[in-house]
Length: 237
Image 1 (tube, rainbow, N blue to C red):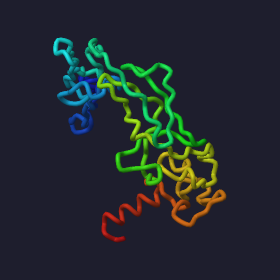
Image 2 (image 1 turned 30 degrees about the horizontal axis):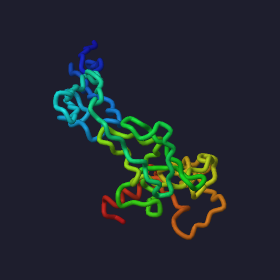
Image 3 (image 1 turned 90 degrees about the vertical axis):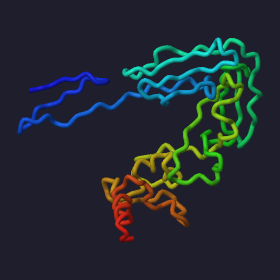
Image 4 (image 1 turned 135 degrees about the vertical axis):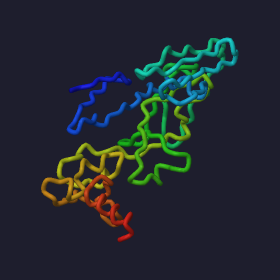
């Protein structure tokens, strides 16, 4: 016997032995992130969750606009940019070895594209106190494809937080542990640096200088590290 209930999506609940319904539940669907051009211009009552109200706050209150997140994970409407914005963003600074191509200019809504001055490096967003030289292997910075001039006449993401880190080598999962790739940003070289994630169960270093821990099994999802975490929690290590 089947029972259907309409939550956010249809949920099938089955009657199991003993005359009891099996456990089930609904997971709310968040609404998509609002466009970056509105960054800093709106407030929401409950983030991107169901029934949250987000209000765009313009310099002139008559242009304020409120939208709601529905149960289907969609906004009731799209924001419309305030019409009385006359300023533009300043040219993005060339800092942290990042350069910008801004063919659209610097007006609200304009997009600039970052590139690294050094070859084989990617522009990424790092936290305030983090630099390219202090990134840890477990950090997973987001790669930046572009920055946009928001209605607040500020660039988003902030160019001051964009740094260049070494790109991943295209050899993940080839059976050789490439130390350059042995970090979260490169998916820990596709599992090549941990015995438990290799079919051969044997790690083979590729031209590595292993003075520090670049050659160790760093992947937190590898069995070696899961077991170590359990021992640490139990106070046995």
